[in-house]
Length: 461
Image 1 (tube, rainbow, N blue to C red):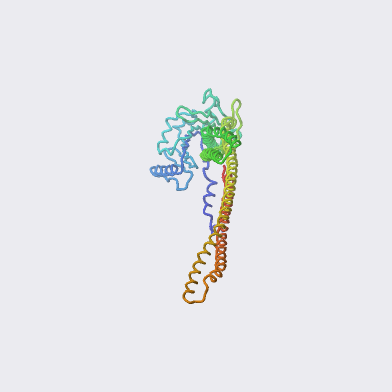
Image 2: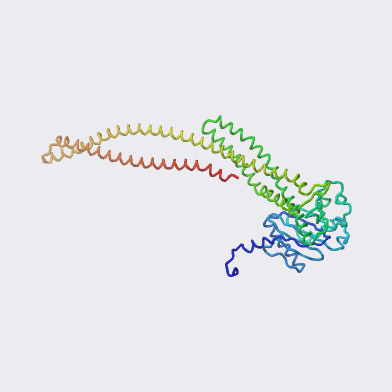
């Protein structure tokens, strides 16, 4: 049985993710104030603790440590709390007849300023990004169509899920900063109403977060344009450059450009990726609604496609320009490093040639000095031998000093020459070992310099 087996440490979390953020059945009419706040890890944790304290004051259970969503019901109000990767949402649902004027509520009545005070019951988690005022009303409350509610503005309106409901909005903020969304019940069931309202609110949330990448792209645009303008100038200077110092100056210039580019790319990497992800979510949620445009109105898909796609393309274009520039800068730096390596090798070759010439001259001088030194040493040793033999001769030893010295001279000279030869051979062996070590070091440095550009190119975004 499965219960007898050791589960993976993430199994429960993965299985629970399928049931995360479920849609709940919803009665008509309903009024929902939906907020989304930008929160990082620390802010999200503080918000979770604040919500738990709020629930404790009401005598209710708060969210668990790892919960991503939570429901709180009190005083005829339902709060849906959801924690996402970079934002947190609060959806306050009102369904009391005194609030919605049931059974025939008027759209967006009462005014939102009489309802928005509920958000002050808990501390604000972070900067406000999304504020939506959604009103779910029966079709009988809207006899003249959605235009009568929003006035003379361009609307996005469509029937969804085979005519079960009509959704309409102008995607504009009202005097209180809310985007008003109207959902007209044309015969929905409770579960269907809850799913449609959830998808509509997700579209509003994700389409707002999608556009966060546009300011980022606009902010780094001048830097990218400047690098694009300067890079051809550097390449032209490379064609005319000559000499090691000039090439090093150009390499430093390219390195500064690459550092500036990579800094901007690293800062925008998450935001551009999030823009793509959020735009995909918007498209999926709109597809799930199965829109059918009303006569005289754009559907939500058509409306958002015209407004979101330019921003999405701007972010994608900026990301592609950064990637192309990074590759070009990498190639330019590699060319300059190759040129510098060639210059260094040429200088090293000339230096080695000069060193060889000096060594050859020194060897000749050394051989000359060694010959003179051998003669001088033989002379002095022969003199010492002569004095020794002369002393022996005067002491009565029958040894002729001149004859003995004459016999000793060639022997002494031969011994000195053999000693000098042995010392020379030892020095030559030491020099050969040092030269081999130097060649190995130079070969290793060349291999590292040739591999480094490839490694940097692999890390290019």
